Amino acid sequence: MRRRAMAAIIKKDIRAVSDNVQIWLPIIIVPLVFTVVLPIVIILLTKYQSPAGSSAWELPMKLLDKMPMGSMQDEINSFPTLQQKVIFIGLNYIFLPLFLLIPAMVSSTVAANSFVGEKERKTMETLLYSPISEVDLFISKVLAPFITSMAVTVVCFIIYGIVVNLFTYDIFQGVIFPRPNWYLTAFLLSPAVSVLSIFFNVYISARVKGFQEAYQLGAMVVLPILAIFYSQLMGVFFLSNVMIVLISLIFFAASALLILSTGKSFNRNKLFESQIK
Amino acid sequence: MKERMIVLANVSKAFGDIKAVDGLNFHVNKGEILGLLGPNGSGKTTTIRLINGVIFPDEGEIKVLGLDTVKDGNEIRSTTGVVTESAGLYENMTAQANLEFFGRIYGLSNQDLSGRINRLLGQFGLEDRRNSKVSRFSTGMKKRLSIARALLHKPEILFLDEPTTGLDPESSRDVLTYIKRLNREEGITILVCTHNLPEAEGLCNRYIFLDSGRIIEQGRLEDMIEKYTTSVQMEIQFSGTLGDTLSGASSYELKPSGRVLVTLEDRKQVPKFLRRLANKVDIYSVNMLNNNLEQLYFEVRRAFYEKTGNGGHN
Image 1 (cartoon, rainbow over the protein chains, first blue to last red):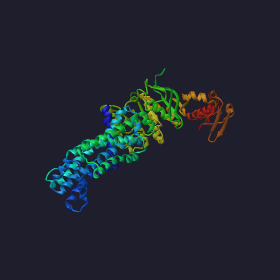
Image 2 (image 1 turned 45 degrees about the vertical axis):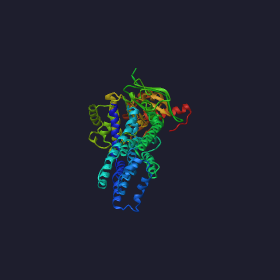
Image 3 (image 1 turned 120 degrees about the vertical axis):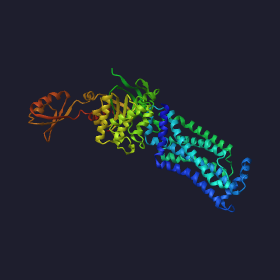
Image 4 (image 1 turned 60 degrees about the vertical axis):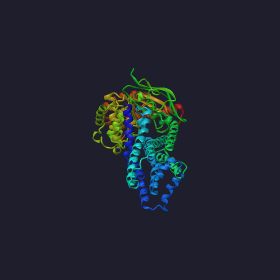
């Protein structure tokens, strides 16, 4: 019975998003840009632009100079041409934090809808009048955005892999994607980003008035991702395997803190007193 | 003694400085329709929430079917159905999908559920709209679906919070008919909150008048009328010559088209007065003007404020 009720909530919360074009369209467009459009643009740019004097070449080369870890530098230096080096750095490292925007945005949107949207549409009240336990309700409402986010992330991971390999095969005479850092990104860092984003939404759900506000505030989860993106560009750190694991752990820890500070308020009494008018 | 489904003992609940419910003592008997009447903010919705254990009392104790609302909330909620003032349905889902969703939440098996859904959709006249999205329903249809939803798990007690607000007269009548039928045919105990007094009058067996979270009066309509009204006002439609038949009235006023407005000092005079009148003229209708719930409601509130020396409103 418990599992059936939870499955029903998860299914319903996912459908609430998939039924609403205004919600799922941005969820589809962002990943499409980051996994298809941008990589193709970058690849084509390096193909048809001469290396000399082009700004598109400067950034990855600067990055190459700053790369701290010998092994990775060796790997990159093993490519004979400058074009290969640039494409490899761009697609394998610079793009990596941008890819994280996908789980961040998908989970944030679904979570905003699932927590605040339900309250706003006054269906949370009906749900809380049912005999479902708060723990089951909470887990279901966290799983709905998590499952959606991970499904979209994995699909994007595959699309990205296909696009990258398809468009670079002639340059490298082989497959360059994915490397271990991307597996870690898809299956460790992306879940961490999703969880952080969901719990951040739970945290703000008690403090916002409506879905729109929650959605806007929830977009703040892109800030740490942009921070990672620029840090790498500035050479502060480099997204090596160790670094990805470390960042994942930090995100999981931050999620734990968020949920410890708000988890208690997710009970019927508090929900009714503070949120349902 | 009748079985008591719900018992509240000295229940108080405050939100910040505001006492939403203040020392409530009442019970609900099995099989009755109890009306909780009072102006907005008198604590009606809070009372429903307290009884269902979704909020906890600051003081006092509430038992539902012998269970404690603070400790056994989920057990209680599996035997109650609540129709909130807003319908509380998922607008992006069809009527059928809404009922399936809530059926699963209440743990109904698939077979039970499909049979139950068919029956309820039929009972509430929604079977041909089962695959329409709720967003396309009228307010009345939403309300009916909301009641159907609350009945999915065959609750023993049904709570209705302002069941006819926002409905047109036909829809209102439909909803009230369904509620009465549920009570009569399935014996469901019903607690209904409303400020629509004429509707409540035809619906409830017993009433509780709330004001600022306190009970100012409770009982059966007849008993309370007996207690609060001494004089009787009635409008009589007749034909013939009245003569001195109205001499027993404390006052009367002739109206056009063969009607007369009569005030008697005491209810006990009514039978004798009417007998005498009927001997002289043909009586077509007698309309009692001050023995309905609405009149009583204002009388009770007036008496309460007089007693407490409180200005009050209305």
